[in-house]
Amino acid sequence: MNKTILHLDLDTFYVSVERLIDRALQNRPLLVGGTSDRGVVAACSYETRSFGVHSGMPMKMAKELCPEAVVIRGNAGTYSKHSDLVTDIIKEKVPLFEKSSIDEFYADLSGMDRFFGCYQYASELRTTIMKETGLPISFGLSVNKVVSKVATNEAKPNSQMKIDEGYEKPFLAPLSLKKIPMVGDKTYQTLRNLGLRKVKTVQEMPIDLMQRVLGANGAVIWKRANGIDHTPVIPFSERKSISTERTFDRDTIDVVKLRGILIAMTENLAYQLRRGEKLTACIAVKIRYSDFNTYSKQLRIPYTSADHILVPKILDLFKALYNRRLLVRLIGIRFSYLVSGNYQINLFEDTEESLNLYAALDRIRNQYGDRSVIRASAMGAKTIGRMHNPFNGQPPVVLAHRKQ
Image 1 (tube, rainbow, N blue to C red):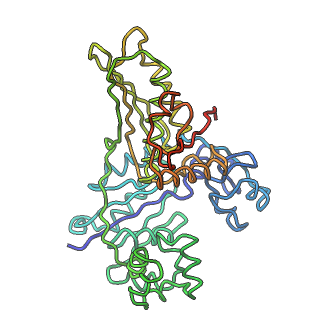
Image 2: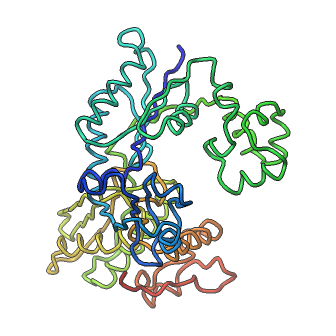
Image 3: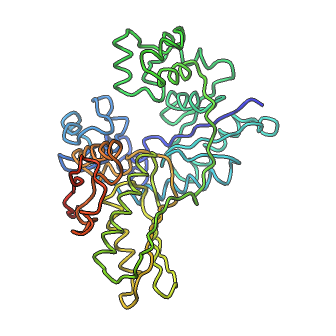
C-alpha cells in the first residue's frame, strides 16, 4: 500500500502565540528571544525577515537590522501549553502521529483515502486546529516525510500543499538545495563550491559521486533530492522516558553527597537528551529509604534539555521529597514526555555564549566520554581521585557551579 504522510508545522510558533496573547502585536515586526544584547533570537516574524533577521542570530544584530521591531523575552511554559493543545487535537483526530518538535508533527494517513480522502481530511484537521487554538498552521502532504516537510515550507505562511504520487522529483527539482532537510550551511557551501545550487543538478548526478564528496550523508542527500525517503512515522508516546538511579552500599544521610549525585545524574541525562536530539517536559525524583519505603515526586516543565534549567528543578523536587530523619538507600531521576527537538526552546533564556558552551562541552563528552567534564558541585573531594580519567591520567575538566 502506498504511503500518505502529512507534515504539520505551526507557523512562526512563538510569534503566533505572542500575537494570540496580545492582538496589538499583529502585523508588527516582532522578535522573541533573549532581551539583552548578548541574547539570541528564538523566533522572528515574517516582517523582520526582509531585513535579514533569522532565528539563532544574536539579538543585538537583529535589533540593528530591524530597529523598529518589538522585542519580547518569551515564556517557555506558555509555549508548551499551546503546543499541548495542538497535540491533543491531533491525538484525537489521527490514528498514528509523531511529534517531532514543539511545533512540528507528522501523521500517517495511509489508507484513509478509501474512507475520507486524505487531502480533505488533512484540510479539515488544519481548520480544526486553527479554529480551536487560534494559531496559524501549514501542512504538506505526499508519499513520505521528506517531501511533505519541503511542501509545508513551500506552502508557508499559513497554507497547505499536496504533492501527488509520482511528482516528487519535478516538485523538488527547481528548488535550492538548502530546502532539502539535512543540508545545513556548511554542507550547502561544500555543494556550492562544486557548482551545485539546485536540487535538479543533484538529481542528475550519480549517487556514488555524492558519496565520494560527502560520505554516507551524500547518499542520504541524493535520495532526498530524488524524493526517496522510507523513514516511518514514529508513534508519539508521552510515557517515553529515560532514567537513572543509584543504590548505595551503605545507607546515607549525607545531604551534600546526595545533592552532588543528583546533579551528576541530571547532567548525564541532559547530555543524553541533547545527543539524541530530545527534549523533556516532565521530571521526577525517586527516594528509597532504609526501611524500603519508596517515594517519588514529579513536575511538568517547559520542554528543555539544558543542565542549568534541569538541575535546580531536580534539587527543588529532592528538597520537597527528602525526609532528613531517615537513611537513604537509593535515589534516582527520570525524564519523561520526551519529544524530538534540538536546543531551541531555551533560546529566549540564554545568551549566545551559553549555547556555544553547551556545544563545546558536548563535543568533549562525545570524544572522551560523558563523565569527562562535569560541574564542581557534582563531585566531592573523595570522588575526584576515584574517577576514570580519559585525559592521560589528568583529572576531568571541572565546571565551577554558579547560579544562572
